Length: 273
View (spheres, rainbow, N blue to C red):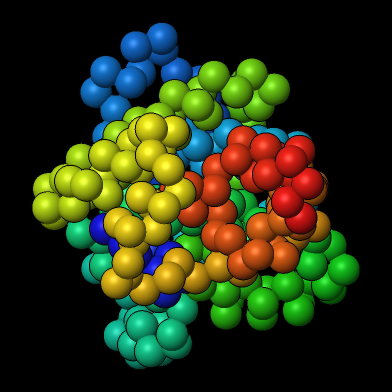
């Protein structure tokens, strides 16, 4: 369950278009009232990712047609009609990530403690890319896109799907429901691995003191700090600026199960800078 998200990018498969298209309503938030009844972990991930992508308020960006072209090119290169030499060059290029672990999986290979930060990283990366492409000439954009990881191309196309939505991100109920379900999947996964104590503490951290948390975490590798660009997170309004600054000062990961946003704000209120 403990996964280093920056090492686990997703990859294109021959069915990527169909898989991504099936996630369109989850990315756009245009769902029925009972969508959670049969929602898979990946669909919950797509709901949360789509909410954050819509929060970027991007309806068009320079190079979006080139992104679509690159998306189609890569699907061709992993499909049955690919030219062998071109396909080999693509597979050897180093832009690919992990193989999906279950049939019908595209957006994420598994849900872990790092999943919320994974969403933030991917939205921040898309945000950076669309702004970089505005200053690049078309020829250079094509070169940049050809060398981007598969996951980045997929996320830029997902951004287009999310931005077509009529659902505004101002209503955050969808986000909270999806993140609650992701949280529950992670807890169940921890318990399945025999991490019952840690799962129970992660599930209801308010019932445990910091000393107990530190006891449970003894012997574990410390969580790697979330290496994100702070100003991007501030513009996305993922956390208040003062909370992000506190995390930076103390090397506290975005996914730290104890130091939630509320706890950091309480620490600041008490003058613990």
